[in-house]
Picture 1 (cartoon, rainbow, N blue to C red):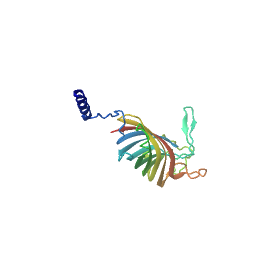
Picture 2: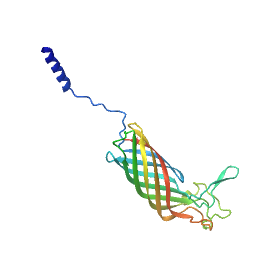
Picture 3: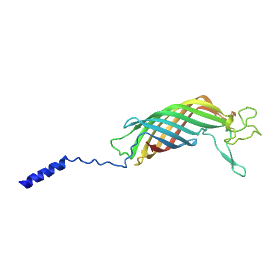
Picture 4: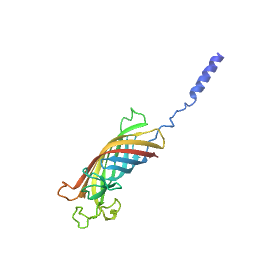
Length: 230
């Protein structure tokens, strides 16, 4: 009898103790954070940055900026001379594109996939800026390169450029990867488009060149992100 009472007392005391909660200290927090990015488009490589602010378990607010070249698909570089100098026939201006967009990220399949793989969809929109500057010294202002007019290096005519303003947006799918509590990596596939209110002058105004200027730039974008979590 005494033994039974002693066992009941021991069981009751054990039941009264708090049960420890086991947590995974390696699980990522995936809250707000800033990311550096490398982008690959039809025009070449670009760089950028992204800030994402967590709104809920599924939604985040985004601010993104990218910087990359703008080109015409018909531009082809040829190597000439003993030192491999490149020349692009009919090229008129160098162009840089700078989208500065805001948007929303929506996480997918949160209940079915662990936090170390977080697929999402994104949509962003906002202003896009372009800056064009001369590819050659157009001394007579004809818009075409005449014999004797000097071809400029990418930085030589930078101060003689003109700006353009437009609007654009990006639709993309991607995923954040990793189990770190302070950082994560991501890959994203999307399409980005921008429309400018004044034409960007890419190619020479030559009779052989059809549509030398354009208002719309559209390209697939593959992005690699390196996120720092807060």
